[in-house]
Length: 339
Image: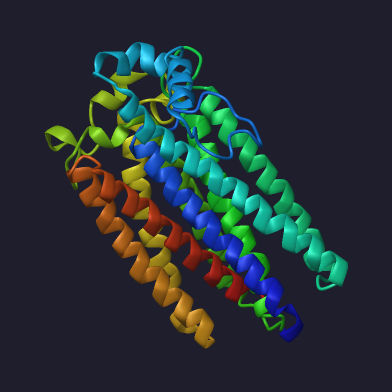
């Protein structure tokens, strides 16, 4: 483990940077900043416009696209407003570039110094591919809001968000493989249940992306029931014609799935926690379960208040951040029950 310490620090640094990037991505979404940069260049966009002339040129380019023509043109939108939304999208992309450098430069160094074993090397190549794919998903998402509809596709937004979570979780998993190189007897029932819980948590994260992309948190701002004291609101049946579209493209249906899935995730984590009482656990396994229970109740509470207060910026962002912590605890717990 000693020889892997620098590699572990490198991987965990990547986890921290991905976390920061997701937080900034959340701010970008909640401040409607994601469509402010209408093109993407690997080098020339590294710095924001540095002169008023360049700012004016960027602003004039932005005016050619639907977000300005259909929305902001009616809002007394000034170049000062544009600089604000530009900053968050630029900062989001800038962190992406930093992540690329933080991954590639140490990776090449470790390769030359032969500090990475063959098994970890294969995983690092997977991470490299995931990072490149995530960059593509980001542009793929932004492009959807630059054509006719001045808003990004909620499917593409959720894909970009969820894949960032998965990239983070896999990076953490690779680091945990190095932190805990020893192998022990696996408690198969707990591992199976932890895997099922992780799947439902990822589905919940996907639907969190749907809710954000459709602004579905701005309706039915009641709990525990939806509007008009209904558990399953009538509007779910009205918005779309098919059940598939009702639960993937309609605001009411998507919110219903997200708020209902929250109960399932809480229930699965509690089931895992109490089922584990029948087994002798290591300190790491118990700590992972304790963290899961605490964070899932915190996240559930935040979700309720985010809904009740119609997604204020700080609550929406906090809800997303704690989702990250919940996935961290879930990944750690599953790892400790798997190896």
